[in-house]
Length: 584
Image 1: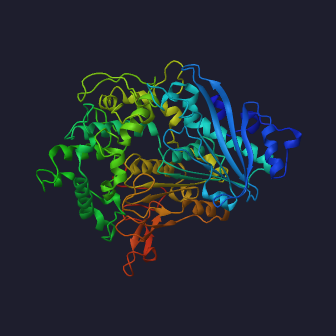
Image 2: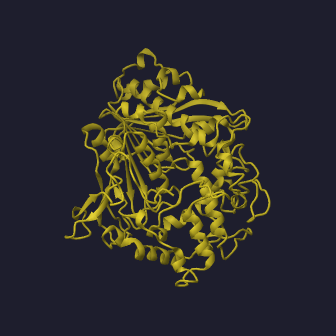
Image 3: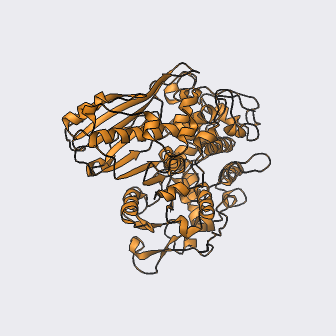
């Protein structure tokens, strides 16, 4: 696919050449109109399914469509590829469209069944150009698609774009017109896709919710290798496969002690000791206070591991390769452990997502050429090539990628995320990067962006998100002008897309709709703490950055009405945003 064609505003006719037979054009919604979609002429695609589904308890009556775009054989690995999209169109349509973002490395079609379909939204999802059940191999497992140059680009940007526009074209055939409002929502990889749309295709959606986005994901993947090496050095046991057992680096009790120490040091710095850190940039926690020279709760190796991880990935010259992390009590939550050290299951096998999902994505997707031998490190002492081994279905349960992660060299291997080679004409940062700050077209088209980030997210750093947002402020006329189209919300205590000791339940989507359709910009999101937190039912305002929630001084601290959003003292209201140390 020509990248120039996909780089800016898209034309449906140029992108897909979609047309419909006369009988299908402007067909009324219903059995006949839905059935007629099966005969639509799609030069680069075909309709796999077009059927009218009766209403159920969970879904209204709707026309369900599955399409396949650009079915082909990959020139490098000889596997069959296609970009599939799934679309559900309710017969009682509110003239709105919602596109659901993907997750992980995509490869799953999705059900296109977001709750908004019950409100009359047409809903779509996509696999972003590869199929985890088809594009697999003993070597790479479900990361096999990374050997196909087009599949890499589809995963990064062109797949969701083509799927969204194909869905809109089918909607025009079924409803006789385009949606009045189009929205995107996603978290993690889906959040990254939302940012991608706002930067590469700024006219496709009126509003975007980007949750815990994998912004510049290859950089975050490098940090996963850095973290893995740091925790491996503190491991106190080995797996049956002979690798350091990352889970043995910290017990739950030790992580809880770290979380409690963070609270003791930083909780009250937001004006209220309530078990939450709302002023993270003021938190100067030192893990050495728990080490041998302090309370003795942690070993010297554990202290070093925490210092390295929270300080952020660096090369041997001290240059930052990714951001550091805020000290947040969410470190003690299971969602943090699942990503950083595992285990996902109660036996030693290195099941942390950093070495299963991240351990496969970094060598295959984000390194060019895919599956390059590493430069080797002192931890491993030799080069190695990644392999999913005998368990490609869930690579990593057999420590498959751990040796590669441990031998990853921050000087010689980290730069490969910027490399091109042979048929791989785009680097990983070319097709996955979402750290852009040119939002002129997004603003011109009236787009609105809500980004939220878990302050204790163990895989995508809030510090990285805030550094991007400050750049956005500097290049878009200052804080006031930037907040006219993009707002970011920090969620204290929250892990990746949820969980943790946090008020992690909030409705960013409704806030987005009110902003787009009514002009009501969200100064805060009302959030509540779910069951399983220390304070179920507690509510808090999540304030649009840089404002933070402050207790008014009276009333229950469990009630959001007794809090106000205020500018922290170290932030200026001027055109330029002055900040503290939260941009490591």
